[in-house]
Length: 414
Image (cartoon, rainbow, N blue to C red; front, side, top):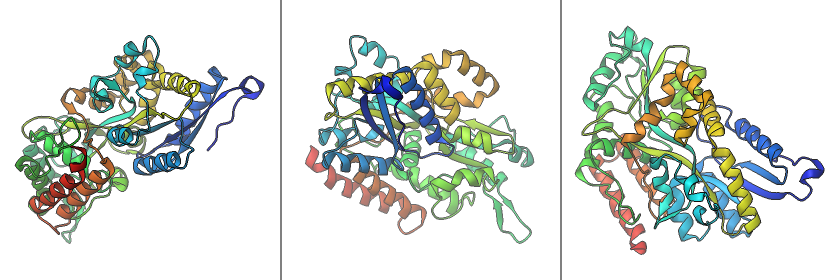
């Protein structure tokens, strides 16, 4: 979609094209369009063409295809974890080299957990925008019905499995009408596996992005727990659980708990016809969730004038008032502490305290899985998760295979 400029004052405007993804519910494209239009009104010398490009994978593919075709965008919102790939392609510029004299102060104003995936070799290559952690959504009405305290969500894996057993509901024929808990395995299966692995005390990659730890015992045990929730505990459906439809399943009462991105929080808030809570993910050895979501990148091929205009746009989009607005309208975590100090956000959190659970979980969060050739590695891990949850391979067989495949891919980067 194209957002036109604003008359004669924009006759000599700097033109920017930005690709961005949507992977959550709600009118995200309308929110983006509105924010871009307001930016342009305040900055008539800059025109931004904001292009919705599909999910994260689609958007990365579109950006790379455009770049190789000689017409790259000047900036894009892409996975924060696409950094190694974008650096290997020599596609982007370090933000701190073009952010101006107060650039360091600006970049240091973001939550450190959100900067981890964007900083390599002492340089900052991207700026947090639509960022998240995974949280546990739970139906408080279902908790009451099952005799559980709706103010005490599970804090450990064992508690989650036990509570989930009480929350499973069956009809007279013995068919399940409500599951205890669901963890999505399609779309971003690697992300859920990383959360479980972190909670079990296992990281999945090294900082250089050249080594992975998919078949370490604690990673295998994490995937085994996930599989056991359906095959052993009987509290989760067998087979794949769809990322895209799980939110609807939760809203329709088909599951009492779900793991999902906080980026769906506002869509859940607006769709739920029951009282619901949001909690940090339960622990095994420790609490934990990978951060997730997208960052702004600026492309190397943009002219110096366009790069400066892109920085100006990114600064506007991530300024405290806009960051607060974006968080309230979507559910994503506002990317700076300053956003939570705005009067708008203070008032919102006072009436809806679920809005800060994902932010508070940042103290337990780690960088999202990010290595060289990230797209191929994600597919390898996602395939392994699917093989395990569908029963075609044991968790160990699936992760042994994923480890071997990943080592072959990453060997060229060592």
